[in-house]
Each structure stands twice: as C-alpha cells, then as structure tokens.
Image (cartoon, rainbow, N blue to C red; front, side):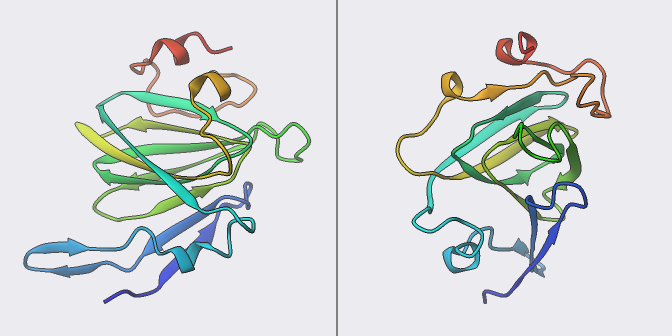
Length: 177
C-alpha cells in the first residue's frame, strides 16, 4: 500500500523540502502517509530522529509564528483545512538570511514541508478552521517558546506578502520585534 513520495525544494530556500505523498482515493475518501522513517533518514543529521508530535487547532484568520530555534527539524502538515505556510531563514550567516518562501497547504491536496533548524515557521489559516501537525526531530530537551526566536509577522525587512492585513495573533506574536 505504501508508495513513493515526490520531493521538491523551494527556489530560494533550497534547504527546505516539500514532500508530496501519493494519495489513495476511492469511494470512502482518501489515505496517505505523512511519515516513513526510512524516507526521512537521508534528510536528517546522523543520530537525529523524530521524537515529538504536536497539533495546532486554529480558526480562520489566525496567524501563528514566525517561530523557530537552531536545534529542531520540523515536518509540518495541514491535515484539515487550508493555510498560507511561510518559512523564513533566520540564520545570520546564511546568504538567504531573512529571505522567505510561501506555499499553500491544503488538506485536499496533501503536502508536508520539512524545515531545518534556524528557519522560522509561520502559517495563516485560510479556511474556516484547520488542524496543523508538527513532527519534531531534535537531540536533547525540547525547546519551548521561551527558548525559541520569534520574528514579527509583518517585519518590513522580511516583507512577506500575507493574504490578510489584520490577522488574529497571540500575545507572543503581537509583541514580537
């Protein structure tokens, strides 16, 4: 039943991978695989594996992010709904520092994005609601909000063309610099 994935990368942020699974559809609905360990081992550093899953349930016009750290790999998937996904390079030594890429993730056309350490992750909910899955790979302890960086969602240096100018934000995101 398991089949291959199609892999893509962004033009600017080529370290970020887009994974499109083969989807099985029939009269009951659809079925696809978001994670097979052997498929992802080649992308992760030696002795790093996925160890932690999180889900975000959000309503329309909620913007979460831009958050990240310098230790965690994130495999993100919109499992219900439709979102505007943004990834920002926040590695000061990188030639693509503060460059970003965006993609629409829609549960009706499954895709996942593999985000390396040092990149900020954000999404804006376009549908009435969404369920967003994070699969995290890291060594050592988990770095929660207090150990992560937060970039201002509308930072003019990053210049993201969000499809909404007044999103619903958390206190953390409203106060970001």
